[in-house]
Figure 1 (spheres, helix red, strand yellow):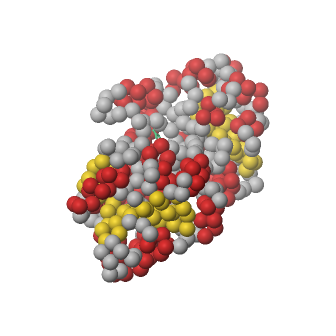
Figure 2: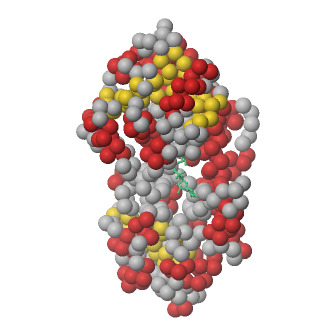
Figure 3: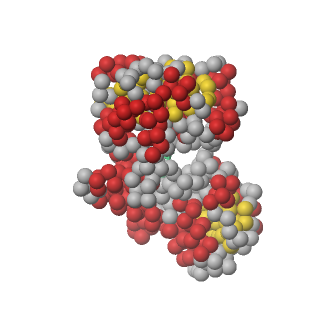
Length: 443
Ligand code: UDX
């Protein structure tokens, strides 16, 4: 199929590259000419393992191109995918400005029948709105469909090439066959439904995953008080197929470009039809407070934080990405600075983005995990990068001022921590604290 993808952010670029990879002719469009020039030179604007290799392969095969000429891209394509951003407005609602602009431009540039597919996450009813905007700007016939995207940053290519399912929101039944065929190279699990249901599936899926995370985080808080181990609890729960084991890792809460934005948007969507989504409101509140548990644990072990040196391991909202949007690290670092702590920050790749966001004299930017630990009164691990799992914990006692490790992601096992001399605090694993606390430091 000849496909144009509008927007070269995470969803647009990865979708475009993957559609080309399975044999389609894809042209990716963006207003930003500098971005297009970089893409043409095989420089990806997003950090995603493997993306540049796939770009190169498909560009060389003549199946992938990048342009800022929207009209040209639309005229030569049968399917036009809208993958522009829908950032949050201050009230939590999705900002549809970019979507509306894309719809208008598509309408103006259409020279024949087109299928227009929305991949951006949009509130229920938005595709009808898009249909109206396009219709106002063209005399050509067209169909609008909703194909929500479920990819995760850091594993976006694999998620797109091998998804659990594809959801096709379609009103014109004649489109089910060609669109199913188009996606069959990815999976046989193709679910055809109405546009409104497809729009809702995306929000409901993200809200449910966010709920699982906040649920296990609250369980972890109780585990700390009753002496249970949340990792064991999650394992035992997850063996029940009705529950499933994924998204039950307790930690400092979720961040990223999707969960915080989409949960807020769904609360708004419900509110707009006079429904108070109480459960989801609590999920959001629990997530906001969970990050501060790190600070509480720090204060409990160090006392007042003013003048103390704290090493931070990990800034991105999760591993394998440089994305710091809504990362819990932002508020943790801001709170520590306000408390008068001196900070030694290290992240394998998100340092630059973080520095653009927060730069303060109290921050020292470090080149590796050990440097961030050197001279520190405590370390807080905020992102579960593989790299941190390989740090030789027994060395920390020699470089740190006080050997305290607050593991916000339960990265280390009891066996790894025992005998290292570290005072170790994790999330929802009280036994581990007692097991690891060296006699000399025990209070
Ligand atoms: C998410 C959805 O998974 C994806 O389907 C959707 O398209 C976009 O939003 P992403 O934001 O890339 O993807 O990250 P994900 O891997 O889902 O993690 C989100 C956040 O939840 C991270 O901050 C992660 O650390 C946290 N998380 C995840 C937990 O705290 N515990 C878990 O068990 C799982």
